[in-house]
Amino acid sequence: MGEKMRILFVCSGNTCRSPMAEAILRRLAEEEGRDDILVESAGLAAWPGAPASEHAVKVLAEEGIDLRGHRAKQVTREMVEAAELVLTMTWDQKESVLKLAPGAEGKVFTLKEMDAGPELTAALSRWEELRRRLHGKEAEFFREHGGEIAQLKERRDRLVRELAEVEGHLQDWESRLKAVTAGERQQLQQMAENLRDLDIRDPFGRPVEEYRSCLREIRRYLAGILPKLQEGGGRGKDS
Image (cartoon, rainbow, N blue to C red):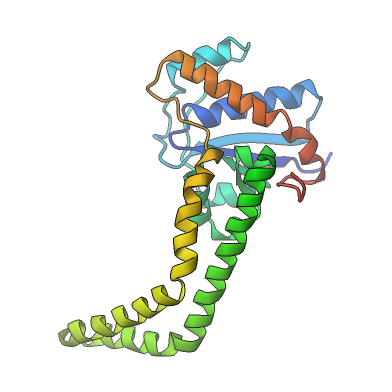
């Protein structure tokens, strides 16, 4: 058969949520006879080589899955770029992954985005549209004023003695940029709180029941993923 589809789960330390999601999706794929999927996990702040947390091992064992051999990995840009689909446990992690690999936009989602429901899907569409408008305004601003800003930055580098004067000019340009994008930034900040509903809560350091609850939530959102991967992954238009 052809090359396998690479699915990458990402959380913070790669000892709780992402390895649990990795193990569950691998089990689901095996149960459905899917051998066209390669599942991996990594962490944004992982301690490489660290084992899965004790409670994660315990709750997966209750599912008949042995997580004792798991070892944490630090996520890299190369890992993100090599994956066809990257699923994070929280919205902030999604944003961090996109900063790590800006070209990955369109294939990086929170796990809950795969089955977000109509209300959150609508909020995501508004968020994406607002961010496009923000980026458009920034691009337009820099097309109009980028030359002047670049000259000021070069002058600052050459003439350290005039640093205070140059910094004043730069701050003026930055203030103007903030002024023309103030509306979008304020709306994005307000909407960000609502999008926290896309987070899978971190059970690290909490009682084992929190791990069980986390696992149930991960299982719930993974259950509908396999059918969506038939056409190459990602969040469908009507998901």
